[in-house]
Image 1 (tube, helix red, strand yellow):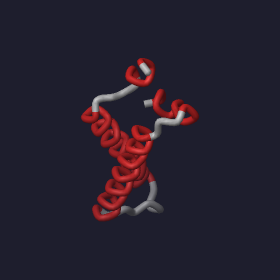
Image 2: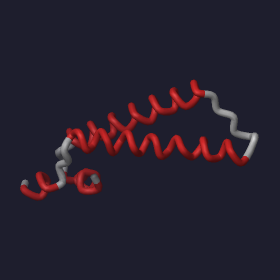
Image 3: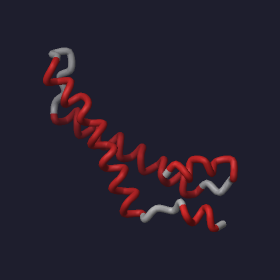
Image 4: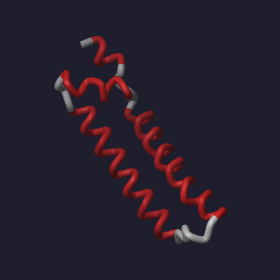
Length: 79
């Protein structure tokens, strides 16, 4: 039980980590737009992608937190 408590992360740090990951992933098309005309995202595209990334990250974090089966404990140790 102590091992599981060791891997628990403060919810604020988890939220910041999810948000930073979303921002870093959004830099990929932003940088690619500087080098090619094949990627042409508008502000709306970035907003929709940010919402999708944040919701997906929050759902994954919730599932990992709520899973108590030892089979899935590897996911908890990765966070």
